[in-house]
Image (cartoon, rainbow, N blue to C red):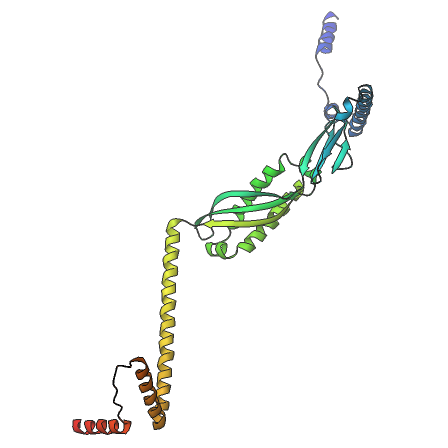
Length: 299
């Protein structure tokens, strides 16, 4: 009997393991009860704050109001929670000292330069590209509560998006399709930053820098292409001129009077340019006779 009594005492002293349901009950408290308790604490703190403001009036009245500019909004937190009603402003608004904190958000369009990015194009050419981004905050509450630093996050995302978009293009497309690339980047960034309350308004590709060796090769290719086009144009001009001369010769050969008039016109132009030169015009018929006699002698 003594041994049995001793065993019972040992079992009573052994700590019992909590059941699974008991642990879940401890870990997962009732959300409604937490909400009620938070509201109770907030109400009590608000009442105490009002009493404190009343007692210390008018000293504390200067700490109960804040002002935001026309282009700003204030996101207010009371005891760590967002105040209902959204962002405040512009103008003056009331806050509870020691209970409320707020952050100002600028709603104006913000501009920043994307640092130059070295990008490997689709045709394996390394280029350095930089761009400029225009964005603005369209929902101050989301911009403060959903992301730690919306400005820094937007900058990092812009650099990544620039590399991703240009990595799918070859060099010729990057140089000739800047507007299409800018629109694609703007659409991609706007979709990605929408959960942050940020709207990307515009993206511009500023400069595309090529390696020095590639620049020299492209310049030599362009020079060769220009020279080839110049030779083709000169050849086409000579061909057209020769055709015109042939047509003129055919017309003059068919009309002796026209040939005589051309002869007289040539004499007039020579006499006008070189007045010191003495010209003895000979009839064309006489020259034709001399030429015919010369041909007969040769035969």
